[in-house]
Length: 134
Image (cartoon, rainbow, N blue to C red; front, side, top):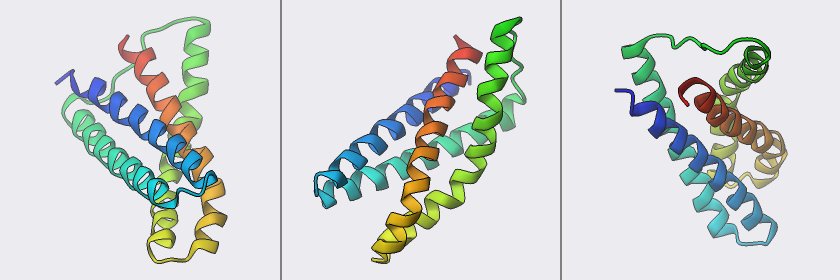
């Protein structure tokens, strides 16, 4: 089952790319493309979360084996990643629900916070994967 972290990292990276594309689309007024990028990013993130929980349910905790300054770097990335990964779940759901309900003023207001946090979580998630498994 050690192929699952690779798939999860790919889903996480894909979500990050879709978030950036969706942001660029909305800045250019391409609302429909923005909509599909963001919904796809959300779906990829849900698939990641299912794979992540499945993997850790079956494999348990994976301990970082690095030492020295790399260990400090790893935990400096992992700690904020973990905290913000917990926060991004309700933020992403609320942001998406506002958009789907046509409450675009609320959507914009919360999306200003959701996007950078979600991007941070995606990028640091892939970084943690590489530090643990590569």
